Amino acid sequence: MVVEVVVTAMRAGSEKGGPARSSTLFLAALVSFYTGATSVLLIAAVAILVPSPARASLGRASLSAASIETSGAVSELHFGFSGPAPAWNLTAHNQQLWIDLPNTRSRVLPRPLYGEEAAPIGAVRVLDDGQGGVRIVVEVEGKVDFAIARLRSTIVLRVAPSGSMENLAAPLLALGRERVATRRKQPRLPSGAQAPAAALAGRASGAESAAQSTAALAPAQASSAIERGRSAGAPLVMIDPGHGGYDPGTSSASGIEEKDLALQIALRLDAALRARGIRTAMTRTTDVFVPLSDRTRLANRADADLFVSIHLNSSPNPETTGIEVYYLNNTTDHATIRLARMENIGAPASYGASGGANLNYILTDLKQQYKANSAASLARMIDVQTVADLNSEFGAGVNALGAKMGPFYVLVGANMPSVLVECGFLSNSGEARRLASSGYQQVLAQGIADAIVHYFKADVAVGNL
Ligand SMILES: [Zn+2]
Image (cartoon, rainbow, N blue to C red; front, side, top):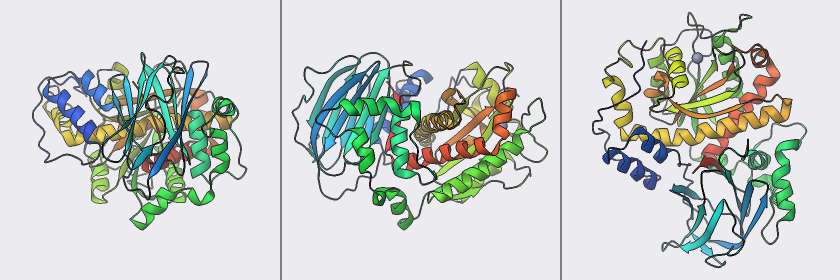
């Protein structure tokens, strides 16, 4: 089946109103749309979103310290607070990252790191946002990757030139894990992953170090967002094991079928999320065929907050391995188109017809565009978290293939952020064998669950400028 991904004619979105959250990003998408920008510009607009945290806060936070440490290619900024670090609203504006902190006062200089800033970090400015809050503006030079985390009384921002650090977020995810996870019987510091932040923090002066923060993380604080979620109705995740029944999906040379592994991993994800206080539902729990259109319909009917589809990958190149996470959007990447063709088998014949009309509504529905924004952030998080966990647990050398946009039919109809996790390649015999093992599946499922917890808590984010 041909999947038409080059959309030439856009029509106005029919959704009334937009999401109240992240109006800046919503506007960015809108501007790109009305200026007739290409999908590349839309991508630029959506690539910068991270989840907005709840605005409510008790008492006013106070920004009391700022410091910068560099180690190799990584620059690490620490913003210290007297009292708990506030929730942020993070947005990107060309070469600037804005960290908006509502209900916060500043006790640092407007250029707190003047004279210490060095590439890729340009000027760091702290501004009064005029609404009782603070905006930290971090200018960067060139293309960079970033990872940010909110610890107890510090916000840590790591920045490195694009592609120079394989897993920039790993140290922060390790710290975050200490806060949210209770799954480890024997708490353990991931060796390679933890080292950079710990090393940086050890030399940090002034601001609270990441290492101190880790030690100070009170158990009472762990999972606080989820506890809030419980009282307000915990978030609901619809888990979708791919394929099933007479649709086996892809398979390994040794006969391992995608539908079976997807179900096993999905069941483990189900248990891992429940253990973290998140409600779950599944599109299938046995080896049955579920039409693609029914899968998102189930999620919509349940009013799920998130849709996560679990799949296994295949490549003509048997050497290809790794984890990639897709969210709905347009794409011109050939490998993505090929994968989408495989995964779309079973979609209605009209979907992706070469006229393109059936796909147009995906791109031009602004509400849908907004969902893609949210899903992009989560997709990145799942990719870095699972790879960091698997590599630290097994030293498996798993490739982080990244977060990508893909026109997967199963993601189209959902009313909530939706991602599709390609957990690994059955076309690689070694990875197929690992994926079939219960230990590997368990760490993988827990990594996805931890990323989802970060997503709902909005305490860690990754992205690029
Ligand atoms: Zn699949």
